[in-house]
Amino acid sequence: MSKILSKEIVLLAGFLAILAAPAMIQTAVELRRSETIQALNVFRQAPTSKNLREYEREMEDASYVEKELRPWIQYAQYRFLQDAGDKALIGRNGWMFYKPGARYLTERPLPPKSGTPSNNPLPAIVDFRDQLALRGIGLLVMIAPNKESIYAQMLSRRAENSEVLVGVQTRQLLDGMKAAGVEVVDLFEVFRAAMLAQTEAPTVPLYLAQDSHWSPAGVELAANAVAQRILNAGWVQRGTVAYDVKSTPVRRVGDIIRMLQVPQIEKDIIPETIPCHKIVRQDNQLPYRDDPDAEILVLGDSFVRIYEQDEPQSAGFLAHLAYELRQPVTSIVNDGGASTLVRQELFRRPRLLTNKKLVIWEFVERDIRFGAEGWQLTPLPAEISWNSTNRL
Image (tube, rainbow, N blue to C red; front, side):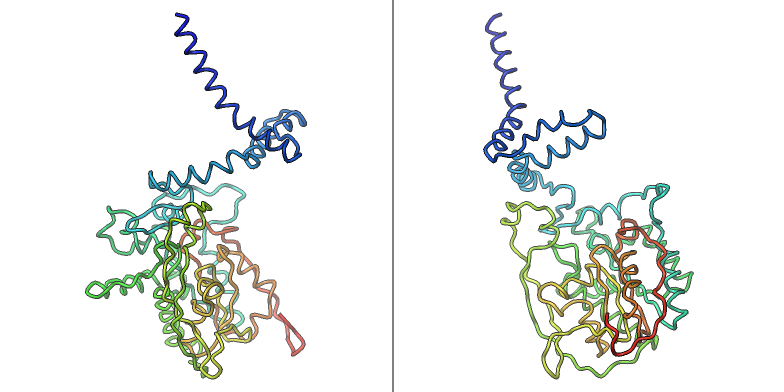
């Protein structure tokens, strides 16, 4: 009986030591650094529910043990359990997917909470179109498909025989814009046609394996489709600026890998080699640059930014659209903010509407539900006269 009791005491002592170890290590680290003992903060304020939750968050944020162990635990989950955490999903053949994109495609949307920004894009789009029309400016909407919608077969073997998938909310928005007379470039159809055409030829992926964004092939296909729509509609005429295309491959680790914030995982990943095509002016070989006095304004998110503002630069959607149209454009780009934030930025920069004939509004598909600040009605800036002394 005494031996059994002794074993129980040892097990209990060991269990208590495990529970106490993180707090003891944290206290020792704080004493060595001459810092305030975080554990004592609980006695410095009233023990309300709000204060206790705040205390718990502070302890988690400051925990030395958690900061040291968390990356290794995440690495073990990734390596042995194929679990990439809250932001990513591990697909097939080395492909990674952004979890909100998969949620958008597979989850039924929850009813909006009272007091939250509008989650219905159509009224905001129609209102924006009508405001532009009063100034003689056209609007062309381009939804950048989620990677999950285009390559569901790389996410799950169960979707191996599927084509391009169009989510319920996406289809509702496309149908709603068509009924309202909003001009749209349907990239779902453009990409579907391109992928069907590749069935008997080597496949050129339209999206990156490690990244949530489209590949250079996807960028160029979208830019070509938009340019043809613009020219066919007669919004602008083809310009006179000649551009050259220069092959400029880059190697990069995708944004989905970087989102994990686990150095151990990044070290395991071989960067993708991405065959970018940089656009340069033919007359002076300078890289493409926006022109604020251009006839076209592009509003967009990171799908417009990729390859354009980051490496290799001047190789993204804006540059390739300019190449197709033989004239520069100008832009407002906000990562994750194409639903409302880009229009709010336009309100603060009225100069960008000068000389405009067309606004192209790009936003990623998942922002139909998850757009930052929802889909607010946003006014255009007041019309004003400009002279040579005015600046952006």
